[in-house]
Length: 310
Image (cartoon, rainbow, N blue to C red; front, side, top):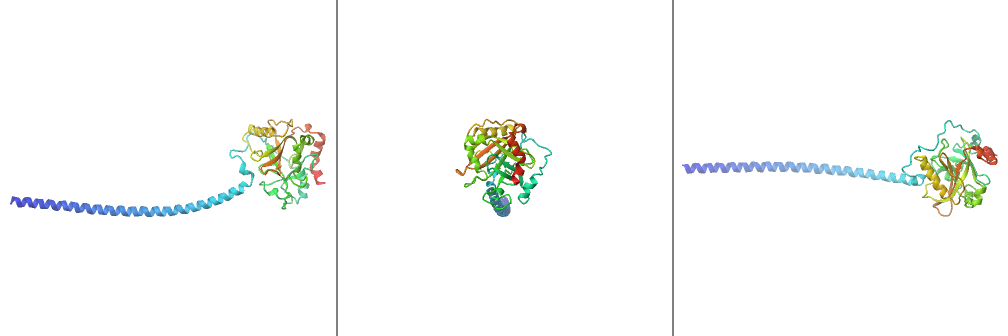
């Protein structure tokens, strides 16, 4: 009897073990299935996100294409070489308040179909350089347009778009073509390679719609375009004076004229028609005291607009 009882106990123990094993198998199987479903969901979500990312990448590529086009446009302008750290100056220019428009420019504008882009007149006494000066929102428009705004290979004389006649900018840049076959536009600048020519043509008249001024040449150089002499905005007066010093040091000869704190300069720039990366650059500084201007030059300054219209 005791043997049967023992055998029965062993049988029950075996059944219990088998039941536990079966339950464990069921639990493991269920857990595995749940994990598999979870993995499938994760995989499906990942695939969807990947597809979304691909769509976003395609948009980004379009944006890159558009940006590239913008870069191509920008590369055709002055911005290509402009230092990225340049900010609005805290030194020069000296701000001028209450500037008054000179009504004598009405007749000059009227001569060219009332072109309101005309902001000044440029004259170098004793040369053929005597032209109205235009100003536009970029440096391309008047490169191949006359003052009637018609297409023209000769173009016009124009002020750098970053300058403004409304301000007293420390560095005013004027551009013009150097024509091959005649002394028109900025062709006479090439003659400044001769120091004797400078001695006889050392004054530049540049009147704007707000003020009449005479400038004295302090440098003439053949500059590479890698030299950023067309900088308009400066962080300080020291930065401006450093540029002016570099321009003077690069002159083909010593003019005996220095640039000092508080001065402003005017630059005339044109191609050399030799190396495409070189420019003839005539730089002059403002004569602040009108009493220092020779009488004949002063008279030409005062009558420049009227003389041109005649």
